[in-house]
Image (cartoon, rainbow, N blue to C red; front, top):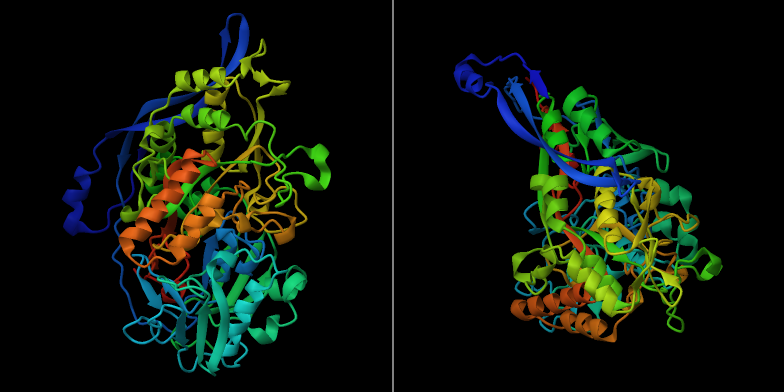
Length: 618
């Protein structure tokens, strides 16, 4: 196939250089296709990775970008597409990035991570350290000093009491707070004076930057949320859908799983920011249509989470309307194994774990089955053909920073169908006439669910074929992303409910220090009815040995020792096949060529510095 596209050159001084780039170029285009074939007299579906060549002639319009001083609100409307639409603006009631990012426009933390992973003060005057006296020498407390003059959008002052209340809100035993791991080992939060707050720990905390740090743990206004504690948290729709904040924007309209409109916070601390008068945050559609709106059509300014085939993005970028940006941090696309029984016949006990009843899965509690599922997967094919430069095959749930990365699991990078079949044979799983293995009347038949997304459906198709090659029947299911990643406890389709045998999504550490992230797989974090299925331990994995390592890490100060503990925890999860890491993912988004100030951030919200975004003049 051939494609030609030429755009006008407008900068004469570099015309010769650009024309050289406009000669026909042959590029490889890779697609995952499903075809039908006749095998031994039967028509079957076969999924393949197909590589073709494509000739592209491109000329690019060059625009000179001129920055000028900004005036608050002069920039008009900023259009952002989060095709996984936000379902709430309260990050304490959702673990979904779509929700925490949307809330970033309004709610702010005491400190956060910039795009390099460096921790910087935000609502705090400075970053507490042992050297400046902000962290006690015994590591049992951290003291924050609020910046002077910060007010909420209703013009009331931000005080230490708001910080104290936020801690109480999340740590309430009946709240089902999805960010509870950020408050691990917190004994109390106390106001020293109107602008000083101290977090006290029950054990020495070598890394005390969990509570109130990053977009996951922002400060809530006590006056607005004081009647929303505990079991009332989920019922406070007015508060959850329109929180009062200190950020650059205020909520004007919010429609869950659809759209949100934000306008300038007139009380924002910088009189010249934000540049844009309003932000229109649109949900719905899919990653491809979101990318097209920015890169080809020019209807939107920013599109998030463009998990689509790399050659499609490259083709769209040639239109000259925008650019693709990416940042690597700790995100891993993984398949999670449900260790509990998701049988619908169990009613309220479906996928439910309790300390008294682990409710074991009928066959995924067999380590041989879990290991065979891992052996059958070709991670390199998934990474190279479906992610391109935005993905690297990985065997670890903790792929960064480098000091924490284990090398004990690299064998998973080699697919071995033969070894997987042998393992199942030895474990007594017998291949039946229908091509599906069974043992003691239990068939290896699974439901594999994920969010609706072209890359994820292509991944599902490949994995289904590999698993069927080892005698595992696999039914595929895709769920609208806004629902799948939502926090609605009434929905049966959320990833936390996990009403399937296996499921797939991306998650990762929210800071370069992995203590909080690795704490997600403690027994106390298991998602269940008791916490409105907002716990972070989705596979329902419970191990005393793992919990002991997590506790030990919380008390360990030396970096090398912390790294060793993190590797041990990673290896337990991977070698127990609690989850199957697939791809170390970069955060891939796109923005219009005219949008300035974007510093894509893999460690915090991508919208973390939206107050600094401006529009170029040509």
